[in-house]
Each structure stands twice: as structure tokens, then as C-alpha cells.
Image (cartoon, rainbow, N blue to C red; front, top):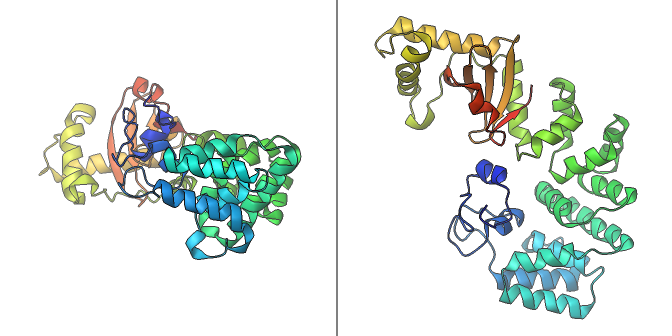
Length: 345
């Protein structure tokens, strides 16, 4: 909507402004900051064009000789090393000049999208594999970067890409489970780690294809696993979230006062201890209930939601195993907000 190359669903998830090209007003496109591994909400959390150009140039010239140095643990160095495998010196010079005169990440990413031939793609992926092995903390960023900007055209390219992210043994183990190559390639491109993927498949019984559909909405798989673990272990026993008020009791009073009378026929009076306990017990019961309950990931607040369509009962739990709200929500509010409420069960 705002021409920053980020889909509205991603912008909702990371809290950038869907109407602003540059949310933090630091002169850098939200999309370039996000895909470059920087925070589009924090002014100054980026590299200036000269720094980017320097890292691309050094990556292209030094490549394997200096990638182990901590100072070069960034995607721009890796990208320079990548394009050096298929670009001639004049092309690299043009990319560097473009970076210094235009938006840094934009010129660089355009150069990566200028499809290398099949043999060069293998070289490019090998660079990513080596870089990721030395800088494992960058693994998810590298996977997303490669998935977005390196065209994977053949079966061999895709195999190399999943080996790059998961390692050879893990890639083989995941394929041996029957996960389709295209699905696993896309999961790697989304940065879904093997441990999280196997938990979602084995413990929470979500097929790999469904996991992919979920994470394509920019759902954090680590948070999703934690929330589903909370549900499975019945962690939501009655403790109420402090919420924005910073106090569990005050937050519970607020929700009881707001939703108790209108939705559940309760007094809503914070001094009504019996009525307030009934409200909490109803939330716990809704979290435990299985039949007729739909499960959603709230992509705005990173909470788990259980929803009973027949009664419109909507209960929310957070990552810490605390209840966050209970009220009645019309089903059309769920159905029309597909980028916010991601169906997971």
C-alpha cells in the first residue's frame, strides 16, 4: 500500500505503518531495512550507503579470505561475495557506485535478482552455506535473504538451498519424513528451524504444508511452538496477564468491568470477587475445551486464541501462560481479518 515492498500482513506483524514508506523516518525504506536485517522501527538501526558499499566491495574482493572476521558478519559482505561469483569487475563497480548514490539495499538486491545462470546459483548458495556455518546467529536472516533474492530454478538448486540452511544430515532427515522438496525449500526460505518444524509436526500434529501456510503470514515459529506447548500442557490455569496496565489485578478488573456484564451477565464490579472468579473460570474452561473450538494465532499481539463459533466466545492466552481476555467476538471480525487471525487448528 505504501510502496515499501512489505505486504500489509508483514507490516501488521512487525508494527510498521502500512501507510508510511519509512516508518521510523530515518531515510531508509521499511522493506530494505527489514529484508536487510535491520529494525524499521528504530531510527539509525541500519548501515549508511557508504558502509553498505564498503561491505559489498570487500565481500566481492576478499570473499572467503575475510568472511570469518566478526566485523564482516553482515548480509552485505555475504552478498558482495555472492555476486563476485558471476559478475565481472565492471558490474561490481557499477553496483557499488549505485549503492553510494541510491538507496543502499535497493541497488544491491536488484543486482542479486539479475539471475545468475544455473552453475552460478550453486556457487552463490555455497557462499551462503559457508557464511552461515561461520555465523550461525545469522542463519534465519541468511535463509530469508537467499529465499527472496536467489532464483532457485532446479532440483539441485533447491537441495543445495535446504542443505545451506539445515545442514546435509538434517536436510536428508526432513526429506526422509516425506516432506516435499518444494515445501521444505519454502520453509527454509521462511527461516523455520528443524527443531521448531519437527515440534509442530510431531507434537502438535500440523502437517508441513500447513506450517508453511502459517509462517507465510510472518508468524514466528518459535512463538507459535511456545503458545501451542502452553495449550497442550494446560498452562492457562487462571493467572491473568498484567497487560498494558502492568498489574494483573488491575488488568483483570478492566476486562471484567468491560466484558462481564455485556457478554456473560456478570456484575462487572471489581469488588465482586465471586463474579470475577466466575469470569476467570470461564476463561480457563474455554482454554481447556476441545470440541467446537477453533485455534488461531493473533499475529498482532502474538497470542493464542481459542474461539467457539456457536457462542462467539473468544479467549486469549499469552506466551507466559497467562490469560489475556475473554469476551464475545462476532465471527465476521475473525473471518475478515485473515492477516491477523491465522487459523492453526
